[in-house]
Image (cartoon, helix red, strand yellow):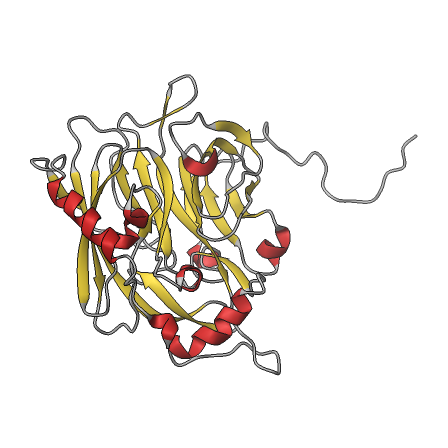
Length: 362
């Protein structure tokens, strides 16, 4: 099938960029640190403020093609993933560090893959230097020369949309070396950090209106491509499936804790809202070099971006974090829950009178 061709047209780019990588000496002699990635919504341990020179931060990520169940009705997606999760793991470094990624495409896979880091400069964000067929691995190094939250995704020639909406996307956070700060320069700290990867999915239906199940990636492609071209998703989900972050899988926090939400959408616009809470500090488009906006009720994520929002919980209870396109949230699945423990503050909210008979005013 012609759509499964390799990115051969980038060979000139590969040669020139690979040469510059060999000659680049900025990373030589720096401390090298290996980081073990974790599956979202969690984020690997990291320091919020660092001292000393930059480091070379080494990550290893394996591509996994697999069938995933995306709702309680058993609907399946022939998915392509980084490290087996949708979204892929969140990588965290500090401005000035070098990201060194080993990208592994096991022989059990059927497709060529690569990775485009929106934080990187040159070579299609790294996609021109990371093309790997099954049975190969490749190592990419780039300098994190600007702070913020950024999307990464697979970007093979001729197949970019399919790979992205089939699960191959994630987030990279580049923290300022002196940590997050408000517009006056006061330090901002988070007690917990969660990744919410929003995905629009396009599952084909049969002639009777039932979602189709496919035995492999190749057999799903043509039908999926036809649905993608309608620009109408069948599902819009957080972290890979309807209900991935609700009920027993809800996020957790406590009154008084500050939580940083890293929310990525690699393909479509989104409008996050925390019901019962706010964005105390929101970095619009996720770039920490810009001052954060304060007290946001709903914020905006342009497609292909990752946004950071910080909130300190003041009341206990179960909060709903959703896309405030309410149809996508309530009907298609784009919502999460945060269960918060602590003592209720009547000064912030109280029920003055319980429901009862109507009392006529005099």
